[in-house]
Amino acid sequence: MKGDADSTAAGTLKAMSLEDLRNYFQSENLSFDELQKQAARSKERQLMEEIEDYKREKNQVRLARLEQDRALEELVKELDMKRDRELRARKEKQEIQKTLHELERTKITALEKEKKRELERLAAEREALRLREDEVMEEIASLEARNEEAERRLREMSVQESNRLHNMEA
Image (cartoon, rainbow, N blue to C red; front, side):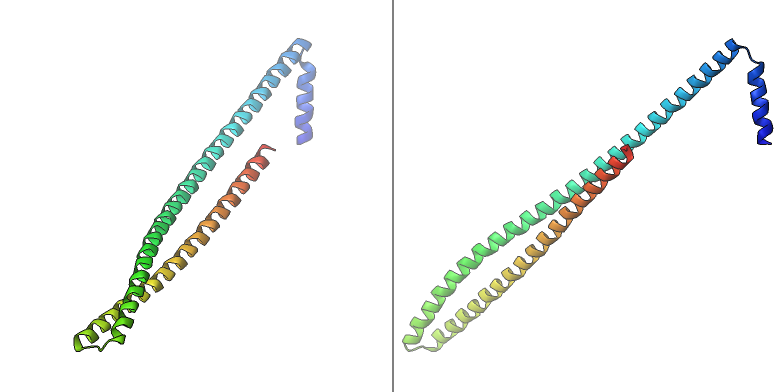
């Protein structure tokens, strides 16, 4: 059947004049050029859409990283404030301990014993604050590790996207 179609097309071409053949091939060539242009425009639109998608993804990752950075800054600020309080608490604790030693050197009355218990309670609270500071430091270390992981993933995504775009251009 295909042989019949080829022989029919060959027969039609033989029956055409030279001028008709030239016009036929020129119109076919123009149609082919138009198809090539359409394919190029389609490919260009597709690449532009992919670039826009990549830009949106990159912007979303950047915004997420900025948010993480802000959260980390807030935690660092909170940690600095806690450190300042801890330093004041340590100084107060030293003063309290000094006061306790002075009280022990003298004969302690019942009222003085009550004050000593209060001072010991304050010292215990200061220790609890120090322990909380250690917990906050661990939280910050955890956030930093997650931030580094997010940055690593961002770099990987960027490399993958660049490779994908490069492969599409090739």
